[in-house]
Length: 303
Image (cartoon, rainbow, N blue to C red):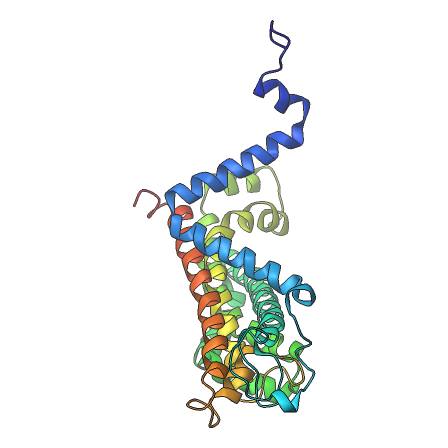
């Protein structure tokens, strides 16, 4: 409390610890935005898209699955912002709900690929020996398949469903994360604090969990951020080929498939709007991923 009877900003933050944490968090975002404005634009875009997907029932003016044949292939107007499709369904509502599917598949598949990739990669790099040799030969075999081809094979084997798509795309990312996590773990294992942990009697599992994994995550998180966009493209590709999320769930890939089947000239909005939505999400993830890489990678921090 100052002599004038007013509290200073420092005193207010000490009285309300949560305010200090919020202030620090906002200051970090502000600093990130000043250093990487394009990254901030990408992050804000993704936050808005996630908010639209979460509150899709409130944002979408129509039920995306309800058919209205008399209004089929209606061009964009005041009532139907993005027009209607071949069954009279509102394209804008389909894009909004399709964003739910794309973001769900993208986030969950990358989480699965990153989680198992980090566990296997860290164990492979830290333990070495025969285990490392077997893991790397299996990784080499999986990397020999193009990601989309491997995802197609897995979806066909598991059957078309949203969970099958998530698992299939997640598995395609595991070998790539394994390689990066292994390299980071091998570097971290040579650090002095790891030698100190061994000297005081810490076991291998404890060292991996407490020291190797946390200090190997930064490059993996940057890689995973970039993979979020490609995972959404992979889901759209599978849906475009008819092997993704089955109807009546709206997906951007399924909408693109409908729009390209003889409607590019007569109803171009069927292709343009879902294509723009897909491009915007991938572009936003790319901007955010590049910014995080530049900030977190010590070799690029001063560039």
